[in-house]
Length: 364
Image (cartoon, rainbow, N blue to C red; front, side):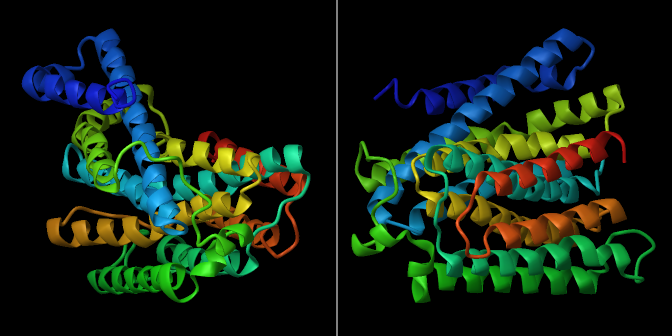
């Protein structure tokens, strides 16, 4: 048991050391080697804890069945993302574009890198794979609507001189986004639950996915929260180092969003890859598209609420080139999940779009 729960133990230990001894040391950036070492330790421990969260979420999936299993994992990961971005927004110098850059990076990583790698992994082992068209269409319809409302429309509105939103727009966007996401969750978990379950799992009551549980459901839920806690508590320290590094290296601001996205998405990315490799493409679709949807549907309203109540500046609108690339990504995703079986060419297209995204970060 101790070996299995080492991510939680290591995370809580590092958190205790940071809070008891390390706050002042972490804020002292005079020793670059020490700062780099602290970053490696914090990032590694947070990644390790994130994978521990995945383990417990998959065990809970065994008890709950699909699509609740992937939903638990997705919401756990989004909780990490919201916490990190809220911490960054409320500490240090204001960075009005970080939430936008992070959400954009998450969407591009999920819909291009994660989907592309998963489709290719499944195609290499199984040639073509099937999924539920109704579920994929539901995901993509809501993702497309929320992405355009949140990340593209603010670029072209005239109420503000930059890509920020007015208080009225912020309230409207936050409410509409939250309501639409809540409606989707009702469809996913109640009215049309079978849209998001593999055919063989429907016959078995939706219990095909999820790792074998080692403890009772309540124990896995408690351990999930305890494993998630270090990620939440260490977010501020990691954010301080990331801000310093970006300023020191004169790196594009988007790099900060990518670092957060990698930290947040690594567990889901691995789970999606494993599911596709095992010919469970529907679970891979639930993980990847569900991650993109929850990022927009939960993170954007949370950031808008924080901005409204604290007066922290927030810019959501993407640059024109990024907006076009996001539109292309959404179009390609619609084609990939149009009903026909997936194949290796479709995965390659997603990876090419992701490579274009990386190029534009360093050469906009």
